[in-house]
Length: 229
Image (cartoon, rainbow, N blue to C red; front, side, top):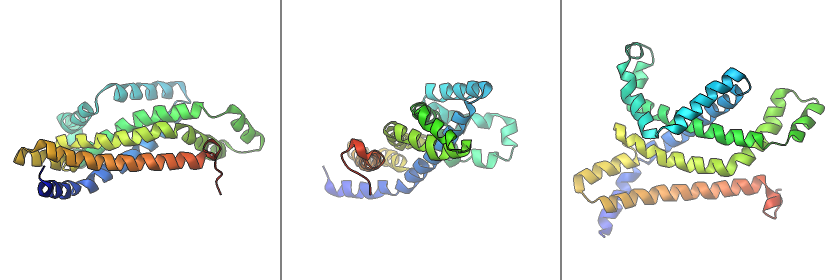
């Protein structure tokens, strides 16, 4: 392999790293907030039906189709083109970010729901007996325990969303994959270019895995033979 070419491609692909990280972080934040809302909706019968339908729709269809439906499909509705949302929805960045948020929310909602079900009822009852309000119980007992239970599965979702950001290159966004695709069309050296992109994604995924393992060890010191200071 041409090491000079590989070095130049690493530098070129890294120019798309800020956009990749931007989409990744914002989709996780937006998806996490929406996932929490979906789980709160499950407290009522109608809300549970709406949340269940939402999760079924976005988990049951490919993310690429969701991106295309938002980017190409919404433009077909006149009321959307005439609304205040059109300046945003006609831009590929906002369409890609919206699709990532909606998709992440569906998966994170199920992960969080599993974590909430794993919270011991005795811990909640102890909070009620001590006089805590429902909000205080949610903030100080339910959510911390649920997050701890959901952390291993959620770390996989974090890595999945990192890889999912590559799909926004199909709607002209020049993230790392978009830059790699453009370089392939110019040089036809697909193996070397894709190898450079894969190494960068792999390095970020490794950092996420290490950070998740550290957080899990901090939250469950009794399982790792250590105590937190």
